[in-house]
Image (cartoon, rainbow, N blue to C red; front, side, top):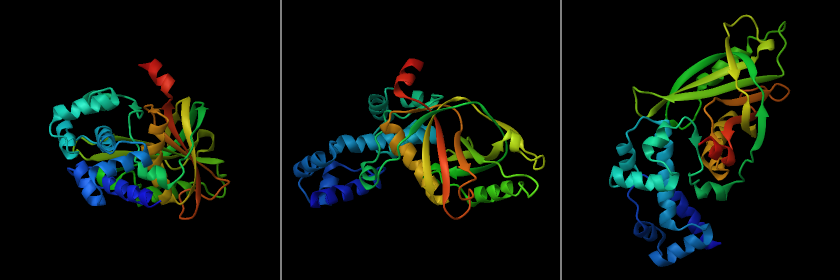
Length: 298
């Protein structure tokens, strides 16, 4: 048990130092063990070789940067302690079967080569996806956009999203019945004006048949296809952390590919009201292909 505690502490330390030039010697000195003993203990407890795990986590972080920022490949390589772009490209292709440039240009996001952080896998149970087919759904809604820094903010939704929800819900007055469910559509793009920022779009919507005439609502469309559904009950802030957990841990473990379509949040109005400061209930849908489908699509 003491050894597991040591390994958990090391996993946390590794995770917070991925952009620093760590070596096996550095990690052994941190733990106070010989390099040989620590590597054997790490492998026995995690099933991973320490050096290979460290490199896989750096490459996984770099894959997120390639998809979520406009930073140059060289900048990303140096940030994660690779000595050259060529060394980085060779290691990246070994793990992801594509060069960094090819990975960045993919329309769909293949998560199968990513290494989830083992620390989170120890700390909590993983959400289990349910694979469902959604039909075409016509919506009417209102969109707010905002910028975030991937490195600084992750996927944190600002207060403006809560305010947007409150304004949207106020469209449903006493003479306009509340629909059985509310939708949120989430999409984004990297900003050409800032290499570390993304422009995100968050749309509050309802089925078209329930849309009020006021509010200048625009038409939106959920395309039919397969989605991974995750059920969440908790606080609004916890929902954003839950989404990060799904993308960083669950998608890679199931070797899923994210299709090019918005993520969807569905809030049943029979539960607590969505986007208020109490407990919310939400089904989160990610457009996906499963491994066998992704292989056929290539």
